[in-house]
Amino acid sequence: MKSDNKFVLVTDSSSDLPLSYVKVNNIPFISLSFIFNDVSTKDDLGETNDIKGFYKRMRDGEMPSTAQINVGDFNEFFTPFLEKELDILYIGFSSGLSGSFNSSKISSLELMKKYPLRKIVCIDSLCASLGEGLLVHLAVQKIKEGIDLEDLVNYLENTKQKICHWFTVDDLNHLFRGGRVSRASAVLGTLMSIKPILNVDENGKLVAREKIRGRKQALDALIEKIAKYAVNIAEQTVFISHGDCIEDAKYIEHIIRERFKVKDIIINLIGPVLASHAGPGTVAVLFLGKSRGL
View: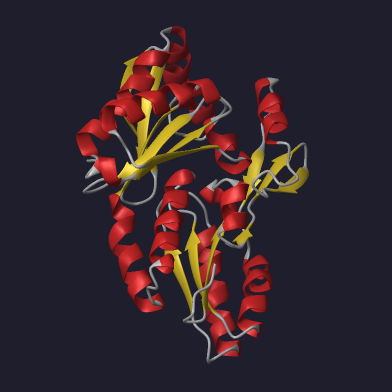
């Protein structure tokens, strides 16, 4: 997306925005990668990837890994916009979860030496999945209002710590693989049907906050986080992301619409990069609060 003041808004695939959304709003994105059996695939928001097939492979026992974006990738991504004499505003995946953002900063410094009349601003969203997507969405709304680059950067920096991410996972073993829980906790929690409630903290890292017994109770707990932490919820577009469990996402959507009378809700699948670590059955709610929630 670009505006009259000659800058382009770009993001990465970890924003997990619907492909239709980025196309309608002309938002270029750079892809992280996921890897099955030594075969690396770019996450392109489902344009060519079979995301449903990805989840099936995980449910069948295949365990993917992921790869961050390197400096060369960012150089290749940013350069065409600079050649068109556009400044760049990049909203990136949390530095607390990936080294990709650091690569973007190195690239921006290199390229601004090569293109001294151009500006590249890299925003560390400290967000994940549709939390990052929500920050991009807010930027889109501001650009439509005609905001300039400097004011938009200030707005995003002041807003990103207000994006609340609350989520639950269905299988603790994926959190164990990612070092979020111990093996004993994963085994015992699975036996007792424990469903953790987690959030993304102010440093952009995943943190386990509560243990809930039972899937429905965990989904209801996410809704209560909105009630507790959201600000002016009726004026918001709430985002819901899910790990191939649309019925659970729809359950939450129905209650949110009925209870909070929100402006709108956007639902999308969690993409392969985040899903590689959280697993099928993950559900998240993303909204604005006074802070990250604690």
